[in-house]
Length: 409
Image (cartoon, rainbow, N blue to C red; front, top):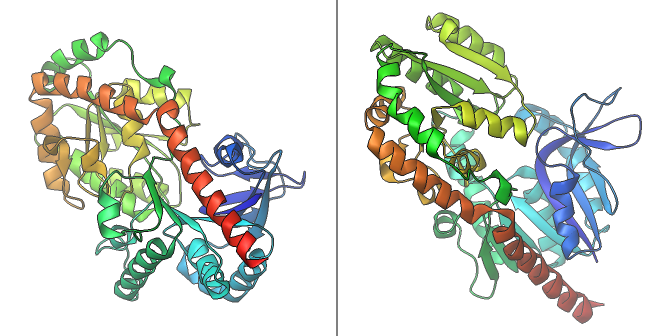
């Protein structure tokens, strides 16, 4: 059976005839679906490139192909290409047997409309929350309130009408976007965490924590705070992280910030660091490949920050936790399923983030307890734990699709 999976992720097509990923959705990610389905067709935006991009991973491969959509970036380009995108998606309904929509998002929603017209069953993987993504302060468009209401309503309906629903959270998204009573439901993260990624010896981390207060006062190297995220997505709030660090420094805290990621806002954030007078305390490291490089970065952080405006279940927080790194994050999405309340802050509030940073660093014993807890919690998100849940969801989609095809062919 051939399954079509929708992605909001953007891909690159090169003259060699292959598709490359811009991020983490590579062939190994997409081949998860092959555990149950015979073929995978990815429905997503694909941009043509003149050459193979450096350091990018292949997304296509054996039994994984693409149904490319016209490339667009942002709402204005989407509106300009809307007719073509919609036309292509209408054609896509005829090239697969089963359908999985990774939502919320415009690609999944457009395909959903066509599936509903034909009465074709589908599964959904709920990976984000449009109510948070489109909250005030994240998007400045005058249509933001309508878009927020519309996208949230669509996601509720998509979950209610789906034959199977998988959530990245254990409870949070389920409450806001419940399934129908006959749907198969489960939860799993999209993360691909190996047992070997889990920190086995936290003694070095505990020793470092015992020295943080002295370093914070200037007796030693600065305390290293870390941020890992896209500079293309406003809801990641890199400017709030910079403002919080500036506030910490203004209070004579000996801290520095390492920011990992790339995107269209990167140069603006470098300019903001200069404006805030903290350019010498901020290191922009650019994009790092997933895997060893990112894990080594988490190992180098004394405290990881993920004070974003929207999350489903933040994979970067789980990765940081797996390395025994203490974390502070916004209380959005399913983040409270990962961290205790003492390590959560409200989004968009740089002063509260600064207060929380200094508060956490002032409590070395509590930080040490958090390290132990983080490693234990992260172990629940290892590949060996999550993969059986994923495959059970895929089987539910396949079995219910087979029943539909038997009854309607």
